[in-house]
Image (cartoon, rainbow, N blue to C red; front, side):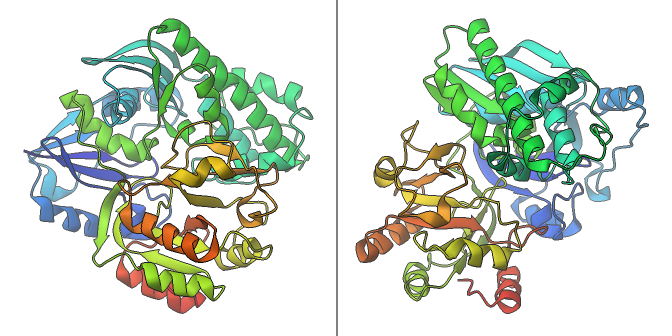
Length: 467
């Protein structure tokens, strides 16, 4: 049976296609429409996934009726669900927002038993929830609207002149440049207010954005650690933890979970896009055959190892658009822009190409067996860039070091991605460096390259080879 899971009409829409216990496809709408964080499902995406067969069931990522009740309560008005006319005869099943988050995490995890913590802005009414994962998922605690750690972080994102529900990761990067105590006491009470419409008038006229960001991050980390601790107290026999919801992308805070749990799993699309898969899994309540995040549009061909090496040795940045696109916000080797991490000027060069703010950090991709020699790894491996880790050799690799001496590390082994591992190994043999700077193959404000045509346009416009 072909099943589609859909999350849409809020932000960052996505579709997943599943048959049995196999994921046939999963991708965000933005890759097909070209509109960053697109909330809608474009026709060309529907056309692409119909190649897998017509769905016998469609699973929606939240309960639309309860969501509309909350919208009325919040003064937003009723919102009608619009389904593609070709799919109206297909059976549609609705699931609760937080359960689809929890299911996406637990049923892709390697754990048979696990605690699950979901933290996001808001679902229907739920903003935070704790689940026990075993033979099935059961909710053991939740917090409700308007109290929301996710809404708090999004509100400060907006207060700093950034786009909420999209640029929280920029606020996280900014936090390393500010004083976390400067506005802590004044900001903390905001947690108890309704921040659904932001806090634009909070300290109106003050534009101390780095200190705002640092204070918000400190508050977030304290609240997040308290939630992890609460999860452990409520489910004391669980050694494993799954973290889901858009807040799971706060990789600066994620390390805190390792203080309380032996093993942590964060699915690489933990936000609402991942709930397209979670909607199906909330129905089946069974583990899926998770082979990794490379689930989107396929660009056929061998991984261009030697061509990439040639460009890197000439001191060039080089893009790779090869294989199936990554599901989730991180470029993990198939839609990546690579550079040598050792040059002092490399960061500025890449920022110029990507039109990014200078304070934004870049991530390294490193051979798994070398990671602990360069970073103070809190885990054995970090395949999805979900932890910020202190670098032991910052002067040797300045291009991937943030203001606070950390890096958002991606580790790679042969099983995970043979082509990318081979590239790193070849670069290591020649240079002695087992690592590359890895950032997404996109320009600020636009989605990652998806197709061959997208790659050609990127190459022509920015004079950077895309292989």
